[in-house]
Image (tube, rainbow, N blue to C red; front, side, top):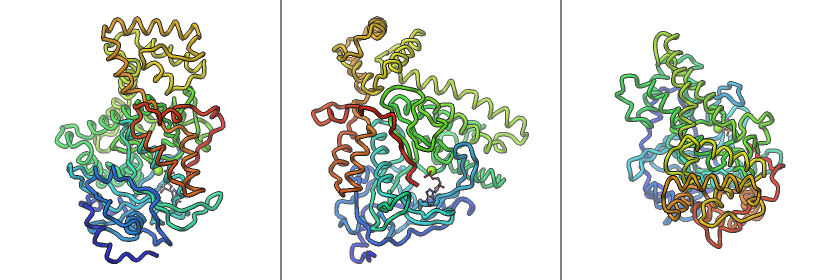
Length: 494
Ligand code: AMP
Ligand code: MG
């Protein structure tokens, strides 16, 4: 075990400013927790760029000190480690859960005054661990690191990843794996399931405190609103509508949209069996456990609405003392969700096709492109990128008369906008990524890190993913889709 000595001072001096608000919530909302002692912590990867944004300077820290810090072996001043209580519908089945393998060290105030959760995932057992070991394996933690950082670079709201350290201990799943801890940074970890936990306990006073807390933290503009819980529900729905639209616009499939994996802040959270679609098909599923396709690419808006209905149910007592009236209010908001989503989705698709104005015909132009992509098994990312150039798209697929008819119609539509083509295609290249975390590239980087302790493949991947809208000599190998991903499966890694 590491026994940090003189270096301890650095741990608190790197710029931490803990201001823990969650521990002031009612006791039922959390349990005290202590990161487990581990054998031999070692840094796998540190996110210096994120550290800087958070006002932390990790550069002066020795690797040993950083490893001890991000394995939870030494705690900076001001931390108050807890495990948060929550419940969740997992594939539709309700369960009382809680952080079984994650420990919230505390909330850190950034130089911009933003409060962020600093959480160690895989830091050992807590009061909510049930039969689990509280640990995490290196592969899935690096996977979360890569994909969350890629999502952030794509401009999509997400939790971030500050560090991954290995523990020097094994975790046992279907095989023996290297143990690791991920440091996750989030606007908060309040989930739909956090509200469900209190609602299931019929603890209305605590529920009201939690709702006010979430409003203060994520929707402060609503704090004084006359119908603040109604506005809160609607604002959460609106952020989810926006988020799911953004996922779909880049081909992202979360994979496990259980209500405990939906954040009230509107950030993408809990990167388990997530993956990016290659060939466009709404039914795409990669998760090994999603047999029925509940969380398929095209189902995500409907599932978000289902999750929001579960959220609305928890808020009923706050919406109106009269339950009938409360239900009517909740239904009003839920009924708006589809229109909210369609608005974000259509606006995003217009941008992807360079359309600056709104015409009724746009919906059909978009849909017929998607239909053609599905029929001709076109790569989602590359098709939009191919369209984002002044030159005609190159490749046999584009010789298809159906595509050519579509293309001519789209060109006429662009002409009606009357903008110079240079500016149209430049705006398209700013929203249609050239590089996404292709599944085979992610796997390749994780294998090198896990099997050969070679992080260089991962670092190269992260470098291209950090500027997903730029093309260079380095990006070309990362733009090619895999030859065939029909048998590609992702796992929860729990
Ligand atoms: P996840 O699949 O990561 O969203 O986790 C679902 C629930 O299972 C959460 O309550 C986790 O804390 C819990 N969990 C997942 N893996 C473990 C583990 N290895 N030990 C204890 N609890 C776990
Ligand atoms: Mg989860």
